[in-house]
Image 1: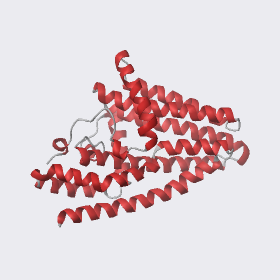
Image 2: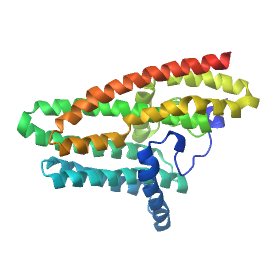
Image 3: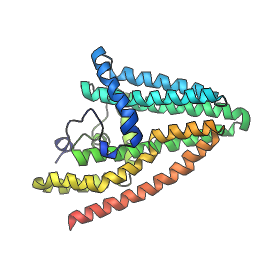
Image 4: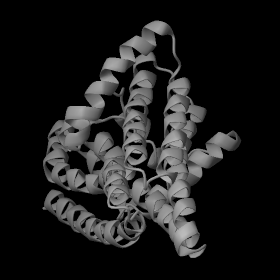
Amino acid sequence: MSDAALGGAEPVRRTEEIEDPSNLYFIHPLSARLVPLCARLGVKPNAVSLAGMACGLLAGLSYYFYQNTGCAILGFALMLAWHVLDGADGQLARLTKSYSELGKVLDGICDYVTFTAVYAGLALALSHQLGPWVWALAALSGLAHAVQSAAYEMQRQEYNFWGWGRNSAALPELRARPRGLAGWLHHLYARVQVWASGGAAEFHTRFARIFAARPAQQKALRAAYRAAFAPLVRRWGVLSANYRTLAIFIAALLKLPVLYFVFEILGLGAAMLVLLEAQRQQYKAFLAGLTR
């Protein structure tokens, strides 16, 4: 059975049982209030993404002056505004059915521009105190961030696909030939996701065979998948941007933003390794249970 046949329409809101509480009770409700207004005014999802990117760039400028507590607070507020706009662009695209390869890539680029600006602002400020080696630390932190974020988003996409029959953005698109620069960039991002997925590609193939062979049990199979994987996907939320935003703010308030880079590389890196092993074991146990 093809992925297209298994997929379906996505809702305006995200899947609540796997959402981080900060998204569920703060960020996404604010985004949801913004979406109908944007739709009525004819604002395009890409424009919302760009507005979020502008907030991110300003946050980077604010964090350059992190030793001023007011600037650190402003940087945090601007990153929160970016989070709200980042949640709104996807909801607006689903509501208005304004999907595009460019939109997917732009949404991802805006995310990375925000954190790149903040990392650059902090690294530039720290380089005056600690020397140019801080730039290497910031670059390594950024690379770790990219891999961790791709892995987290992959788990969310696979959960939505198998748990609820919604479109999955990574695995099916790897089988299609990308078109244009935007298509190739998205294809590359999807490959990073699969590489850091804990065996999602193999599980996807094996579960698809079982799913196709048991048409009368597909509803029960989806329910079993949700019960098995929802708690684990929630734990993956530790790698979400929300916790990075909070960690940056705390480190800036302590006047020790270098601690954030260490936390990103070592702390979140260790968390990702633990989660990947847990994901592999859960895939193995789930498939074994279905075989029995």
